Image (cartoon, rainbow, N blue to C red):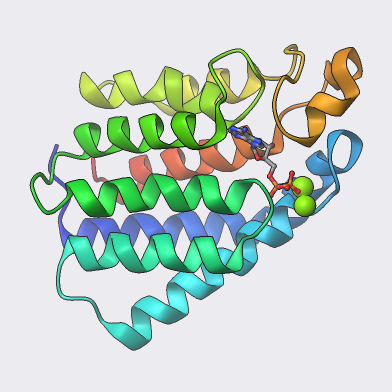
Length: 194
Ligand code: ADP
Ligand code: MG
Ligand code: MG
């Protein structure tokens, strides 16, 4: 499926809305297995994305992806800022050559894995992306897939990020970055990019 400047901006707007609405929930999820800031980090970043897109008015998808990446890298902080930033930076680079969203998201996932060193099963956002990117490829993504991928992190032992300091005690908690990544895919469905 190809992404247009309009559908990309709609996707980011809806993602920002979901982050804003669930800001406290995301930070609450980050409290028992992290430092309680994930919702605030992401909300700060998505406000910056919105403001910078409005002021710079990029003319194509490359520009939209680039501004998103730069805003997230400079404003989110923590572990998740550079990871989401890398995802959008990879898409910015590749979108000069392709507007196929599944292809772009596949490159984004490769960037996240390379940057953070996490694999599927480590209880991070990578678990959600790994399950859902192939669903974009065959154009079959549903909200039930998203919910299942997010939920799967609950029983995992964290191997990366702050939650990994807790080892077995991280079991029984959803990974906050997996939940925010779930919103990214939900926003895709809602934006009708797929
Ligand atoms: P911090 O942990 O620095 O406070 P956040 O709370 O914003 O940063 O983000 C935490 C989320 O980042 C985790 O829930 C997890 O999904 C993700 N994360 C942390 N480390 C990694 C990693 N190495 N690879 C992929 N995702 C990671
Ligand atoms: Mg945190
Ligand atoms: Mg932090």
